[in-house]
Length: 331
Image (cartoon, rainbow, N blue to C red; front, side, top):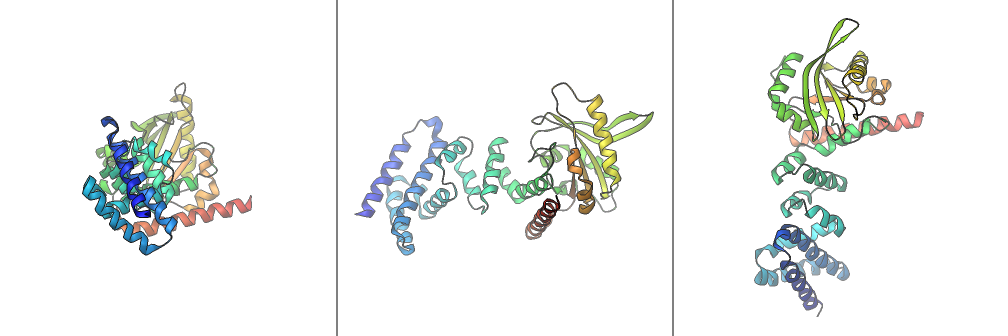
């Protein structure tokens, strides 16, 4: 009797949703799959028997495939169950389904970290990513790299979270050993579109080697960008070696000049990004550089294998959290 009742409810859910307006077909299909997964999940939890749960999915699948087609094959039903498990809030599903296809969700479901799923979901619909672009961002660990940068900016009242990453992956530049700062800058300008994609949504290129005359002396900022959402100029300095303490003063000078001479009405205070081959973490921590609206991040010119990338980012996140915890204890 329980099985017949379950099958009857699933058939009703599918038939009801299939008659939705055609223009909402994609969203309706995703919501339908959620309801199917949720109903089977609830049924299995009520019975509390793992073996029974496996059997019921197989049995229901046969009936639904015969009536509605291959969308309801066993493997697909199991994905629908996972979908309902990973996204328990139907309101959230309805909102996301207006922007993301079922294929997007199939890419997000395997992610173990809920915060990562939420991050990539918002990133995908905010940037109108296709499934391929979404997968590339997941493979390049954009969430972990953004999180690593955000941890370092925990007490910055100037830089918003989610703006920078650490490290930046510049493997697409294909730089040869022994490159100079000028080579790095030239390579970035040659692959400017790729560089902006790596920077993230909202960045617009303004100028290279921005000239500033201060006390009669010429100063040149490597790269100047504008962030449309933040309404801020973003100054970027490129360093091919370790971060050095004096670079903080140099960037502060540039930001003060930009704030005085380049900032337009309605814009926020300019912020800076120092991209270096190696970040000197202790110096950065002692200088509290983030409080001055400056982010220091490493760049990698070679993309390591997936396992090494994951391990390095995991280690970096742990170290960043430990530094912040020590700092909080000393306050």
